Image (cartoon, rainbow, N blue to C red; front, side, top):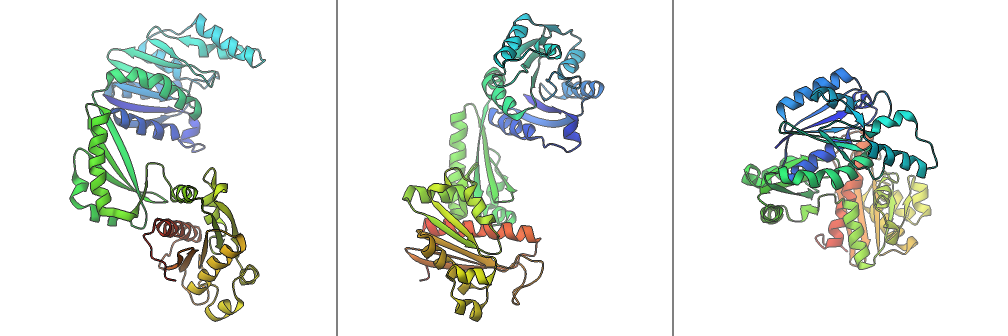
Length: 414
C-alpha cells in the first residue's frame, strides 16, 4: 500500500507551527508496513486542497489528511474531499446529537457553525474523537482510502491509534519493526565506518542519522508478522552492539539524562553538579526528566572564580591552575559532592567563546566526576562552533562521561 500525507493549514506554510503530525504519522506508517512516498502541505484554500488531493489520488492508495476539520470557514478538508469525489455533504443526525450533547456537558450552547462538523458524505464513516469536537472521516472509494483527522496533535494521536490503525490492519501486506540504537561519543561518519558492510543490508535495513544529542542507528525489518520482523531486528541489533559497544547508551526515545536517571534511581544514589561554562544547561538537562528529584539534589552555577571559591574550590587551585583547568574541575566535583552530600559530584568548566580565556582556546572543556570509587577527569577541546553550540556539546559530553562512569566503563584515576 502506497501512502501520502496531506497536512492542511496556512499556518504551516507561514512557518508559525511545525508539522509534528506528519513526523508522527511517518513513523507509524513504517511500523505498519505501509510505504510512505509523499508528504504535502497546503494552505486553507479549497481549490488548492482539491488540486493536491487529486494529485495524491493518482499516486497513492492511502491519503491521510490532518487539519481542516474545525468549524470555521477556513476549515475545508470535508469540502475538499466532497469535491474530489463528487459527493454531497449532509448533516448526520446521530453526529449532530452527539455534538450538541458534548457542548451541553460543557455548559454551553453549540454555535450553529459547528454543525458542519456533523457532516458526512455517502462514502464516509465518522471516526470518533474522544478529546475534541471534530469527528474524523474514514472514506473508501475505488480502491482508495482517505483518512481525515484533526490537526490538533493530541486529538489526532488518539484518533489514529484508537480508530484508524485497527481499520488499516486488514489492508497491510506485512508488518515492520524498527529499533533505534542511540550512540554517543562518535560522529555519524565514524559510526558508518565501524559498521562497514552492515550499512548495505537489505532486510533488515540499517541507517544512521545525526541528531543534536546523539547519532541514531535505525534498524528496520519487514516480515509477515510483527514477531518475525522483531526477531530479524534483534539479530541485527546484536551485531551492531558487538561493534559499537559502550558507545550505545539507549534505544528509541532514551536520552543520556534519562539513562543516567535510571541508573541512579535503581541504585538509590544521588548527584550534585557544579557548572561554569554551561550556565545551568547541564542541570536543566537532568531535570528535564520526570522524577529527577529522586536522585538529583541540585546544581550550583559558579560562573565566577569568586563564587567557585565561596562554594569550596580552594583559592590556591584557582590561582595556580586557573578557573579553566582539570584541577579546578576536580575541585568543583569534590566541593559540590561535599556541600550537597551526594553520592556523585560533577564539575565542569571551560571556554564557551567567542573569546579565549586564560590562554585556553574556545571549545576547551574540563569535566570531572567524583564518587565512592574515586575521581575521573577528562579534557575536551577543538570545538569551534557557536557559543550556544559549545555549551550544548559540553553538557552532552559531561552526561556521556557520567553515564560511562556509572556503568563502570571508565576507570577512576584516584
